[in-house]
Image 1: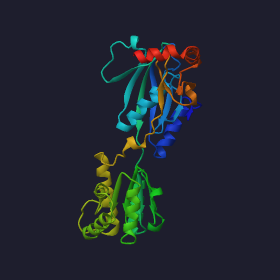
Image 2: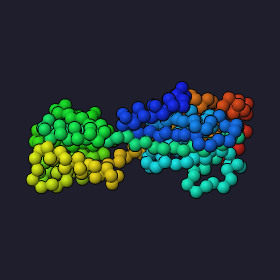
Image 3: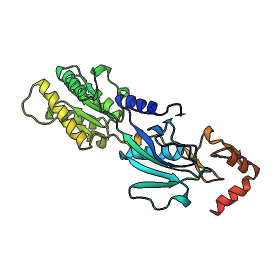
Length: 315
């Protein structure tokens, strides 16, 4: 779904709301334009990992390209500057800019800065001990999204690729909780336990047929080794390790797995990349479906499909 109703500061306000909720998205801003492009200086849009777009930065020729490049930037975690325009007018492209030729009837051009916004960490602490409560409270002080879930209430549904799971059930159903956590494929799984207990848990997983690659992802014992500490101090040790790992980039989720790339097609008339859905004005011909940037290209194709298909075959 693409919602163009958001505009100007409304896009910024929605971006702030998404960031507070811990969502990952890309903020796109038009920093330069050459008329007659429909995008204007300062036009903004938000692109979600799913490909949903909120706001407006340009017409049908720019939108599919923006979504594709925004998803790439989100997967890499790096901002980029795009220049969109006709191939004939690109000229010399400055270093650090990504130039993408698009077939647009308006002959306009845009430069769009796309900035991926990483979500705040999502910590799930499984257990009901004072240590679990302390860890949750400390994480919230860092503006992390944190919650405590009792072992019997925990399931794979509580986990996603962005989650950090710390199992602190202290022998009460550890095995089942860890299996549920592994199935959810979080970015981190840690277990608060002694090394001896940890070895037993890992052996249990192996005997259950859990792949070794999944077992290797379980950190046990979780937390920095601070020597003999109290239960609440263990929470400090665990959070310290998580902060250390995050700073090193080791807690970044597999963003590529979060992306839902939109299905696109090439307009057989003008060569533009378009979405392969109802917005792409589908036209069925010879047991195939073709998509178009606008009614003009669709009408031209409908009058003589063979002429455009033969041209494609030659290419």
